[in-house]
Amino acid sequence: MRAAALYSTAGSLLLTTLAAAPAQAVPTDGPGSAEARGTAVAARRAAAAGIEFGACPKAEELPGSMRCGTVTVPLDYAHPDGKRIELTVSRVRATHKDPDDGKRKVPGQGALLYNPGGPGASGLYFPMVGMVPEWKRIAAAYDLVGYAPRGVTPSAPLSCQDPGDFFKGPRPAPTQPSDAYKRQRAAEAEAYARDCAERGGDALRHYHSLNNARDLEVVRAALGERRLTFMGASYGTYLGALYAELFPSHVRRMVFDAVVDPDPEQVWYRNNLEQSEAFEDRWDDFKAWVAEHDDVYGLGDTPREVQNAYEEASARLAKEPAGGTVGPAQLQGAFLKAGYYDDYWPHRAEALSAYLKGDPQPLIDQAGTRTEEGAAGAENSNAVYTAVECNDAPWPADFEVWDRDNTRLARRAPFETWDNVWTNLPCAYWRAPRQQPLDVRTAPDELPPTLILAAERDAATPYEGALELRRRLAGSVLVTERDAGTHGIAGGPNACVNGHLEAYLLDGRLPARDTSCAPRPEPKPRA
Image (cartoon, rainbow, N blue to C red; front, top):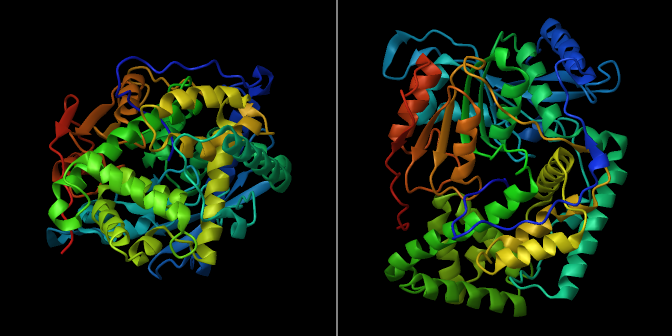
């Protein structure tokens, strides 16, 4: 996910005023709005209909133990009797078996609904997490429920281009792009925005975060849950924050893991600028780790030498792409994942080392062209990501604004800055109306206590976002994984974090005040 961040250099990032036309902004809906009334209508209908669970769609390749069904929601909540779409929901029932005492029956606590982020990611696979040891206590008490948000296959899937054209490889990845290259990428972004408008039609305007939050309310009702127990990761935290603002009395428990900064002034242009800066720090963490293991990888015993090795590989790939598909952009994309999850560190270091020693296959395997099915899924995910973020808020409409802000930023944060620009630049040319971001704030006792989880060096959703959400949700408590940077920490290898997660979800207990956990162990080179 591309959002939020913590400034890592002296001084603040000077930003140019957003140039999106104010007339495009859609007024925020209030309690008496047509959208609020439409949501109530849709929720009543969903509660009456329930969900008929059966076999899951074969194309999703879900295990037979998982059951799926659909929930009908309005495309436009202002017109609940108009066009409707179906959201696919997956579920695995609570086991009711105590993993520590097989003879003890665990009472059920209803459904735990999960959103993995994106926007554009599917949560249909979430119920499978109950098989992981770290989740078995939670899986004993809760029905684990995932869903594909609107636009995400198979829930009224959105597409902006032919999947075969989505992965254009090999491509360059200049950290100081020329004016000609910038014009080329701007033209591509404008064409992509036009294609989204043509393929999406009038429905395109209805793919945004406020509607995602309303969909969550309808799914809650369809599940028969009086109040919602929800866990959101990454973008899912922003979705959860909007739900908390719109439907505070319908919240039972909420976990926010890897938090997007919900400040309306940050959503989404400034969030992405700040994310690019934060990724530079995480890239430095990765290079330092590789340097510590120079005896394994032979890429240099200092971060500067590891950077030189990476740049050498990029230069070689520019001259002769690996496998005909892996160029500098594909290399950068593969190593960007190492900024999200340190589990990738050994794999990426191995691939870089092997490539520079004459074996390109590991790099081709990790960064090469995807299968046809994989390309279709990635294109769909990117289309939803783009539509939601572009629809959510004003963006600069003048490329000169993007150029000025990111040229300045790239001087100190070159690793992700321009890649982030090309990902989000279609929003400069977007043709659908923009929403006005909600100012999420809850008063004391308006919302039940909630749990916020954050890694201190998370680059994708940097730590400042967790601090901001903590300030905005009265009664929330923040648990920090110190000196760690993996994106999303719930249910991982940190027993301290998982202890707080279980105490909250199973017993409703939170620490008396914000607290922290020691970091997880750093990854080790593979044997």
